[in-house]
Length: 302
Image 1 (cartoon, rainbow, N blue to C red):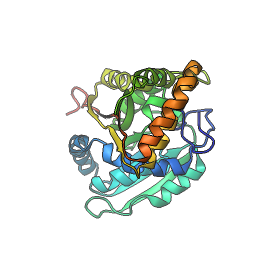
Image 2: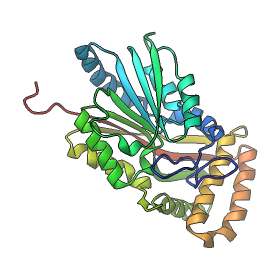
Image 3: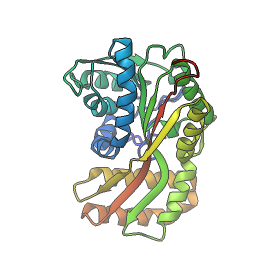
């Protein structure tokens, strides 16, 4: 759950977006992680996405309509809008009205080729995004969302995208692998407990955590989509990197929430890691995966 001081979820990087989750995710944390997110997202997925979008935008003689699920302060829009050509209208979805207001006013005004970019906000439950609701949508996108969903929710998202014939770009899903340098004997045990916490049952919902990308790949492929995945790791470290310290607190906190017996050893471990971080003697690689699902033409559709 969210840390009351920083807004960091126990996962160290995620936030609640699902029905019934009223935890607020602090904008300070979203701002802190935005540079690392931008550096991590897989640019190699943009070429097949642009190719897919360009043909359909021209054929339909209109600009792109992009829905950003769980948009937070809008970092995905700020990263992606300037990398796609043509007029764009972004529909920003989040359960947090304050974050939505920030996102709507901070989207870039221009696309990659100087075309206009506009935005509107929709406050509410993402579970209501059916195929009918997605009609006319050119692209569904999300960042750090997929691993917070259940298997049923991922299947529903894939079905909605398939029914509407729109692709999905789902970035920065946790992969369950963390590498700290220098290493420590407790790293693996904390990492395993953290991964178990990512797969926890939260208010009756069994979260996918590190299994999300595999589940989404299967779900989209069952609907005939072509799925591309690429790694998108966070690379953290350096004496001025406040993100590393905040991530460490969340990572260790999640492990101890899952396994309270770790707390006596985790407390000195965290102190030592934070001390190393403060003087630039710790680097961390947090593995994520980006997924692009492109619908394929139905047989006989031309």
